Image 1 (cartoon, helix red, strand yellow):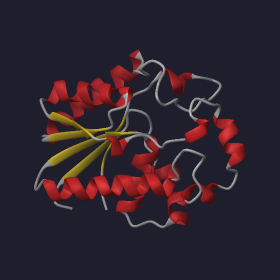
Image 2 (cartoon, rainbow, N blue to C red; image 1 turned 30 degrees about the vertical axis):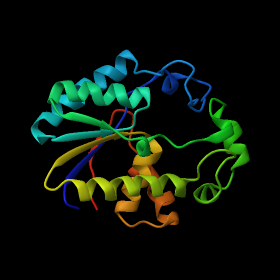
Image 3 (spheres, rainbow, N blue to C red; image 1 turned 90 degrees about the horizontal axis):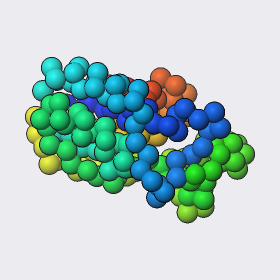
Length: 189
């Protein structure tokens, strides 16, 4: 890689607090923004990032990631560039529905790589778009420290793809590679 990359999952939103786990709707009926705790998480992350001398921030433009990136940008003075290839996975007909419905329809985890929900994306679709994004920005910039602000699924798949993991390895290492809300990591091959 021509640059040093850091990845950040957006801060906590009301969706993480729901007892009945609902998949994010899209388009959002009203912007889903960070909770007070989520804003505090990101303020702490931004302080930690100061020593990394971030040159640029690339982020999903969904409201929760936009808010996260803009908070970090204000603290660091780094430009934010929004890119829809960093969006959360499109869950198609399951957007805004209970996660349990989706899980019943897709009980075999490995099938999620190749079988998208109706009007949605498979894990391989998401992996392809985040890898296309990485190739593009890595060719565009040289020697920069770049922060990528996105969502759980794209960041998990990006890390696994950078490490060259196959589908079985991605599933096996998902607990280790998945970022908690508001978690920051250096992206390493």
